Length: 183
Image 1 (spheres, rainbow, N blue to C red):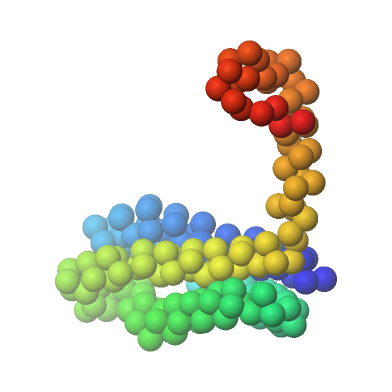
Image 2: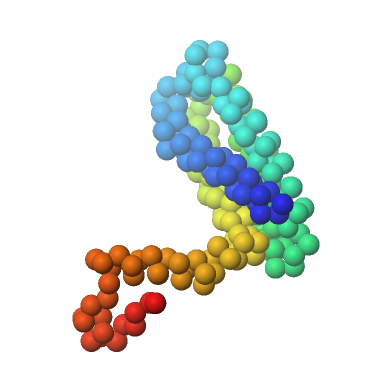
């Protein structure tokens, strides 16, 4: 159960980070010159239809995974790091980014203030980076809860598969430099 909750949280977190990367790379580069891109009343994208459900589902999955993996002492540091960074990023979003985005989308005076727009756009990628760090900490839990995936068994299977291919067989050159055959 712990593994499945962790995998669900990782997938949802990857979706959130992926969309954050997309918005940073594509949308945030374009909307300062064309604010209508982010103004739903003018036919622009309506980000709340994605971000509300996506963040809500991810946070629920993150908390469930944290709850289920907490009993294992080795997982606690990664749980603390993932949850703390994620919720610090969310607090920053609710304190600064979301209110500013609502003003920009509404077309208020803030949407004409180039300095405020530039600041918002230049700070926004840091949220994506922080979320990526939180997801990475969550991914480290795989080493705690699913060590067999990274164990000698998997590595041995990989090496056996590679060595069974004729073009991958060790040759005399490997033996002369002292490289041992993996099998």
